[in-house]
Image (cartoon, rainbow, N blue to C red):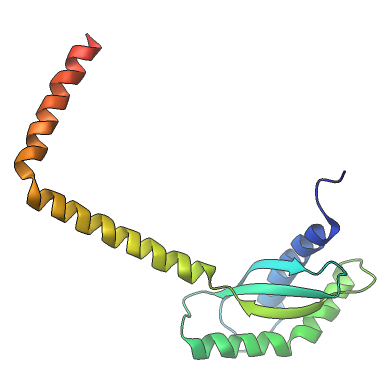
Length: 146
């Protein structure tokens, strides 16, 4: 059995080619710093969903505007891909905003906030207990290492 499906190999190649093409060939000034974060291809290779992120742009209006630019450039990008990749039929490109990066940053900030509040609460509640436990654990470690 094969290690990778053909759709996965095509998706990886599309992701690489699209990243280069969007950066170098799309000359629309409205387009920000776009990163192709992932590509999925349908089983019949008819459609490909291209997931993009925008560097430093999180306003819904800017996201929508960038997606519109990419949708308008889809035909051009598809023709350029056809020249670079040897496929009988180049999949139709459908662009989507990848919210996983934004969601990950939000979750990371929530975790950091929870950690800082826990530390502050622990220090306020048990400053004396915390110092005693440090001294106790230090003596235990020195006895164990002997």
